[in-house]
Image (cartoon, rainbow, N blue to C red):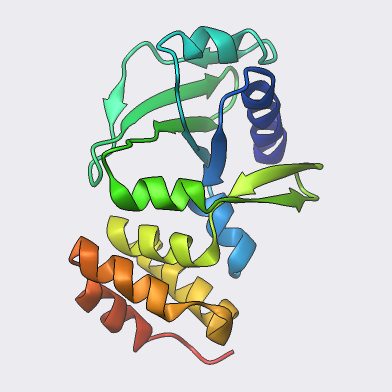
Length: 186
């Protein structure tokens, strides 16, 4: 199974289970930047029920299995559920939306639906500005590269007042300025 097929299957299952979601991570930054390879598919999901895994699982194709061990994302502390696909190295990460995190709530509220030809469907995604802020927040080398790429490709179309506001609130304004100084001209 290809990454895109995997992502499309999970989106379909989330929609059938009526679980609000958005595609995040490398696939969302690829939409606004120069695409890079990624080995996983990431979603933020808003859960109303602790039984959501069963709700999703019943709508997935055979071979998709949730890891029984729940983990936590290091930076935000969000609960993370891993979905594995038999016979492939692919992993889907479902991050629970944490309502107590003002930026995460705002990012989720601002999500927009975009038709992705590679998935042959419309998918909720974060705005380019929210991708930049989240990538700066995570701050792994590949995340900083993703933020730099989005800033380079989107250029003056980005709302830097919005980005600065959240970077200031999250204590990462210096990181924004450091990365911004290294953005290549395209």
